[in-house]
Structure formats: C-alpha cells, structure tokens
Amino acid sequence: MIRLDHIQRRYLSDEVETTALHDINLEVAKGDFLAIMGPSGCGKSTLLNTLGTVDRPSGGRYLFGDRDLAALDEAALARFRSETLGFVFQSFNLIDELTIRENVELGLVYRKDAAGDRRARVEAAMDRVGISHRARHFPHQLSGGQQQRAAIARAIVGNPQLILADEPTGNLDTENGAQVMDILTSLNAEGATIVMVTHSPSHADIARRRIDMLDGRIVSSVARAI
Image (cartoon, rainbow, N blue to C red; front, side, top):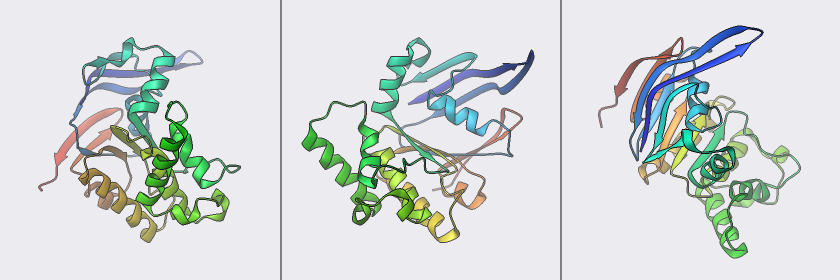
C-alpha cells in the first residue's frame, strides 16, 4: 500500500541545516497497524506528516499504491488527503464554534457527496465511536475522551484508506486512553490501515508492528506475534 524509498527531510533556517529524517525506508501493507516510537525530537511526527503529505520530503520517493505522490501539485494533494487519509491529533483540533456534528462533517469538506449521503456518513461515523448523543453539543461541553472520539469520527467519516494518529491518547487519562485504543483496534480489525505515533509502550504493543526511531532514523522494527 505504502512504500517510502530513501526519504530525507531537511530544514534550513538562519543558514543552519537540520536533517529530521535520514534515509527512511518503510513499507506499510493494507490492513497494517503500525506504531512509531522514540524520544522527543527523533522524527516521529515528521515521518507521520510525510505520510500525510503535509510535509514534503527533501529527497526519496513516496509511493501510495502505484501513485508517486511527489508528482502531485498542492491541489491534487489536498484532494488525495480528503479522499484517502484520516487524521487524529493529540490536541483533538476541533473547532470550538461548530457543533460536534458540524466538526465531523468537516471530514467531507472536499467531497461532492449529496446532502443525504453526507448526513448518513456523519451519523454512521458518530454512531461508530459512540458520540451521537453529543451531536448538537460544542467541543467545550465534552470531556477530553468524548472530544477525541469526535475527532476519530471526523477522521473516519470519509472511509479513508489510511488513518494517521499522532499521540491520540496523549491528552487523555488511562480510562479514556484505553477507550480510544479499543476504537482504533476495532477499526483495524475491520480493515482500516493505521499508523500511530505514541510514547506509550503498552499502546504500541497493541499495534501489529512497531518501529523505533532515533535521530531521524529507523533503528528497529518488530512485528507482534498474532
């Protein structure tokens, strides 16, 4: 499904060049659940942003199926993200002025679905994560766990091929973090491909595969016995 070949990511600021990713080679199969671990500043989020096409690599190739994403312009990448990817963030990234239903519907912003289809997709996504009873509430009226479930509903409303989760339990207590992991595990069991950045070894152990990063490099890759 995904192949990264010799990916590099360099940043230049004030004439100082910093390399965030060094020669990354990685494959993610359809239906995989990959956890990325490592200390702060090791390149985890840069790698996730590269997979999400938010950050363009300085060198190497990113193949998604048979598509070379380096060949796409910004408009095409925006469509690709809308049609193919779902994002879950540590800080939820919900819009305070919108209801939960409206926040979830933002996951369809670039799609041209009929109004009835959009409503059905939004309702199905909220039902899937158990947040339908909060549809008319605003984010500040929800607990952190409920906000993250709403964020997951927004991520899955378009039935994405790949879900990218950046520290999805980082702002949650143990109980709510476990609920979020249960949702991600269930989505994976239903066929969703998930790549998750986490600092939690116990949550990484739930994934099918784990890679560890250090100084912008992948230093180990371990598959969980199933």
